Length: 331
Image: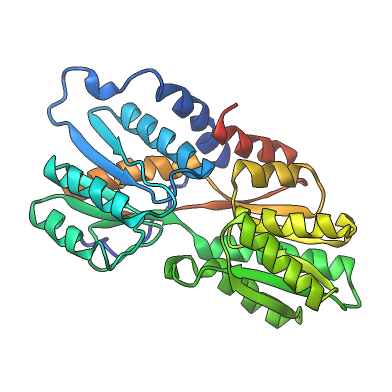
């Protein structure tokens, strides 16, 4: 596969991508197209996400099922792993291997711990694709542009900071998740750009949920009362930070908070037009389609097996786009 280490992006317009969301969300409740006759070959594809309780993962799984149905002759299998439970994820993948599925797409709780399963799967002919970043040992990858994500929120935050605080005098916080190396663009870009612009980062800690987002921001505000800019690795950490500023009674017009992923809660917070000013949103329908397309490419040896879904910056400045992104989650 000569294109193995080349990342592709489909030149799809944003509106066309989001328009698929409505049909995707409805299709997954109407039965799979794989049940119809006439398939010369039916492909079985397992998709494992370790945080199945998250709204983003739930929406993505629905749309992966719908994308498989739309493609036709594809049976999608989904796991029930929650809270990054390694044993649950291992058990699911082992069951898929016993069924000899054609491809497995996985965001591993622990890539090293699953390496033996990967080798066994590939040895029996099952293609192994990684979610959120490719590896040299995988047969393909799907994901999203984390460098683009970090770049979008960093540039928007700096523009707001320069306009709101032309004399400086405020500081920033960036949350990270260093074990997930593939996501490093989400924090490296803000850290790099803030440093170049002269915006001092006084808090940099691993955090990807609301509880720690609240806690570390409360701690940072006690030590640095002039903290006014926060970039979360995801919307959950950023929503936690928002609660800390709200609890403190700080004027939201003087605060900039950004999340990444584009969860419904994050997008609704952006729509409220308060301190939560942006979220770098993943186009879920496009990501779902790539899970199906890249798996089939890996199975058949035809087409690109590595792909990154574009990310768009959701802000209250573009209410139409914001509403379209919220619609990805259905009603």
